[in-house]
Image (tube, rainbow, N blue to C red; front, side):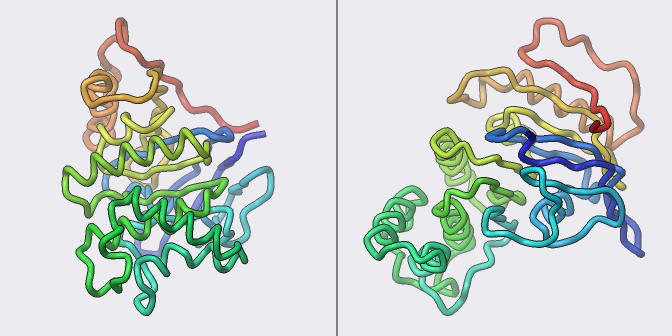
Length: 267
């Protein structure tokens, strides 16, 4: 059974924009990145899977069950770290564990581990208003990952980070995914980031977003930017085809380390 399924999913808005009909299946433990032109509905896709919004038509299923609202088993990290302003960094990270009634020892150990992973040990006692944008976003990432959720939804979470911190967090996310095997969906504006982290890269068409192309990344981990240069160039060409007029003269894939799969409706 696929961990995540979207079958004919449609969501539109009065002022325009939206997605669908969109068909996509994501296997349990798979890491999928989503790229597409601005306004194609990438963040909307996260909202639908996360249960923050409902489809106008079609269905979104997680674990075979239709999504009817948010769940602690589907953790979302947004573009801007949305933290509890009255809690410190360490209290924000511990929040979900306390709600889950974990033991104090378990909470302390997990928080200590993730403070170290996101390089925030020295500011653990500070409040969100006292943090930089980078620190706030790293806190939000740690708060989600510390729960080791079955499904992790990432809405361009590294966009606010400086280049060096972004590279560090990409590596740490890849390592954590290898350990937890959470089914992960990453929306990003960065084609190299999408290819560096994912098993597959889904390219959405211009809005209303539909699955235009799926690129399988057939490379062992860990990867470097040099490793994924070829597949990043391929995804970039496909993305440009969606931004501009789509053509049928794509370059041959002979000699590349990827396999392109045309999307098909779910049965």
